[in-house]
Length: 617
Picture (spheres, rainbow, N blue to C red):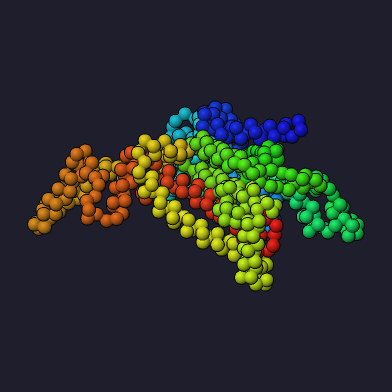
């Protein structure tokens, strides 16, 4: 027991640090970020050398296939079937793995924005630009900077787009230097800096299309983290609910039927040894995934090391926390422990609902403590989505918050034949489903396909409803409440703002000057046009330029009215993602939307169980 707690200690401390990320942001960025950032730029050349040495068509295909198996889409395709076809134990194990994935994603996103270290290609662009800037200064007759001065923490990029901190080199979100962006040096130094940055960027090739416009930080590597913890914890969760013997028999047959050799040895392993073997296989898999991330040019070695270490730490924590968390929120208790398996029944009380509410509150507190990155990134959005989805899954597992369980009478007191009426409703549903669906259509693959189609359609419908309901609901709240609710993780560089009044004034002035020449022409039309333009200039300049941002009249277009409403929200201190979508509405609707969708996905298990005759109590 002591060893278990010692293994869980690092993960618990890391989780606590993520929850308290906002208060400790200054300390981490002062003492932890600079050495990590130095390692990032020192290891850029290692990434370029690895790509130059190993790049070939076969590895291109292999690493891209690998990348597709460590994505959110892959996990969304593999976890729900375990819930649908695995009975009560499979449902509890799958929701425990979902919680692990959600919390791991949240923690990885927090650490990414806390450290704010760029990915290899943008970092190479920025470092090369800094060196070129020093050479330009020297060529212009300025003193030569000390060796390595441009590579200190103050010169290293803090934005996901890397080069955006260098005022001489404006950058796009992907870190590429914009055409025509010049430096401060003389004699064409700006063009030289742009060429140097472009050359540095080309040295590290970003082979994965999705990452060429990425605005997310690099360290730690979430793919390495999840490639370790997801399969490893899945094996541990399966062992905790007694599912590994079934997997062994499905893969290798029984130990008595196997002849000899490796297959017989694998079939004869006990549950604990087989789980340890699967964890070791997960470690090997994560090492391959880590190498593939280097090959793709999206991470450095320090990113991968941090991701692997953090994944191992959280695995030690979740080995103790994951199953009790799922059982507690589901209002379920284990009984009849034997042979490595656990049978599950509801506790018959309201403890599960209270624990579910506590978990939901904990998720909101965790999101409230999310740190603000040094530049706009998309990591906070992922954290919101995953925690919302995890909470929705927990709500479905609890029979007191499950709509389908309530309709079928599957309350705690109705379990194991205690309520004949509930048993009758379940039997009636099973008979109706099996009569309506021919046996040929009841194949698990066809059922899973139908469920995924339903989920896709349901997700879009829920999205439309939530997006129609939340904006007017939020508009009823006073600005002070909205400012308190909106996420502090949003960086101002990622916010929409109306055009400043000065811009309207400058445009009007330039146009008025352009018409002065026309006014001097012999034609009378030129003078009339100049008079009209002068009046336009006076309207733009009048009242300090406020007329340029005044609300449009009733005859204005729909877009102008929307822009005016958005400008009023910005004036009230509300952060806007776009002219039509405030950030508080956007993040709230994603949390709610994904929570409802995952809730519905887990609710489908009751229909599948009755359709296939799987025991549901």
